[in-house]
Length: 164
Image 1 (cartoon, rainbow, N blue to C red):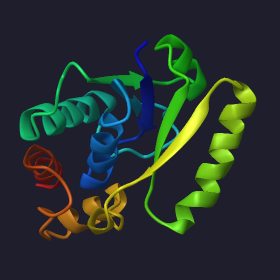
Image 2: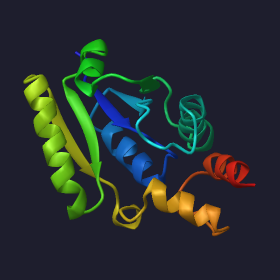
Image 3: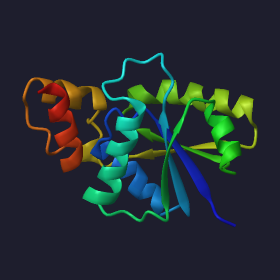
Image 4: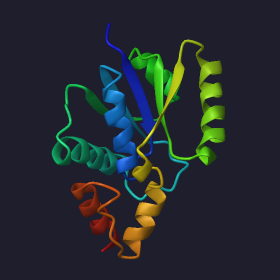
């Protein structure tokens, strides 16, 4: 039986923090569904198609991760419905700091109420990546700072194109 984990997020853009979580999850699960949210109540820098393209380039072109073990999809539904669609009982979430925990704890509880068969697994990125957030990466590139330590080459290129 294949163990599939759903890793939902906005990935606007993907960072080394996200990638760290994906790499760690690959050691535990047979397949990771990187689910890019298309819910429209957020003010995204990149469109859903751009974010999917950026994630694919980062994971498969820049990092050469295994395409057979990772699937990148968009979704606009409840994460629990996505789990049903991909026959997964695992929602994967990344934690950066204690400040993330309260929100993530509530989210995990709500998902559990929606479907009691689903577990949320929290993974922490490595220490050097815990401070990285998509928000900070966008702010740094907007102010023409160096973001090489925060995300992949193709993602940097996409960000720079947006701000030029």
